[in-house]
Length: 403
Image (cartoon, rainbow, N blue to C red; front, side, top):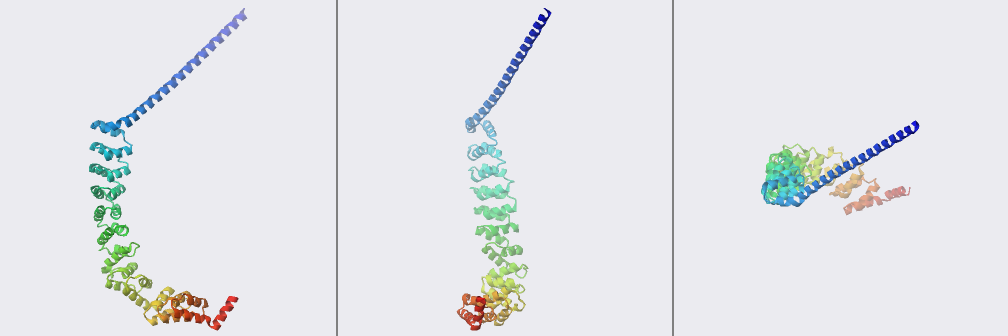
């Protein structure tokens, strides 16, 4: 009996334990379902709220923004913060000034949008507000000053620009003469900015205006005349330097005055100052627009022949010098310089120089054959051919070719 009772007690205890476990499992599952339900409800509520806000923004804000109710309209503009495209539309087309200005305020960090408003908006007050927001942005102001459809905005933008380089950009590149003119006036005392305009502007009146403001600055004029800018600017600078020739130390600038200045006295002085610079004289001979400059430079270069060693310079004297003795001396100094002698024999203006060069080439059959083909003068070609056809010379040439 005792054993039977113990068994029943153990079995009863086991049943109770299993019942408690099953109850705990059901309770845990119920709690999980409640947690998931709360999460779903929260998500649905948030989604509903967002949908409600979006619905309000897109379905109702348009009505609010034209309602005429100031407070509601400003609140609606505030709700559009960060939506640049819509704000630009409001700033450009709203009939309510306070809406337009509020929209511009919300665009304070969007340079592209502000520039767009300054360029195209029909409302002057809104364009002015956009410029105020751009007041520290030189790049945006340059764009507005150059491209706005409205003169008042272009000029206001120029007035707000403080950086000389930015002003020079407007003065050089704006397609509108009004903003270019005002910008040039703003940099009238800044030589570097004026130089930039004179060198880079595609507009002739702006280039010449900038040049006229530089007419008393010899250093800048020297840099312009010796630079790689437009030929018109180089000529203008050379003309303005006519009164400074005796003071200039820059050899390149002096050379360009000799080449380009319309003032004959200035050209004469410039060439005279190059008497120690044979390469500069050669540049005048080859590049000058004026015969007097070329002739003077050639005379000076001829006088230097005894001290010249460069084959190109000696060739120049041999081909062009008006003095026979200088030509002969130049050819004599070219002994052993086959290429230079070939050039003289082929191109020299004077027959005596060509004949003398051929004489120096007598032992260089290959150069003589080249002269016989390349010289622009028939008599020289014929003479070179005769020298090659000489029986002894031709025999030696055949022996060389046949090995």
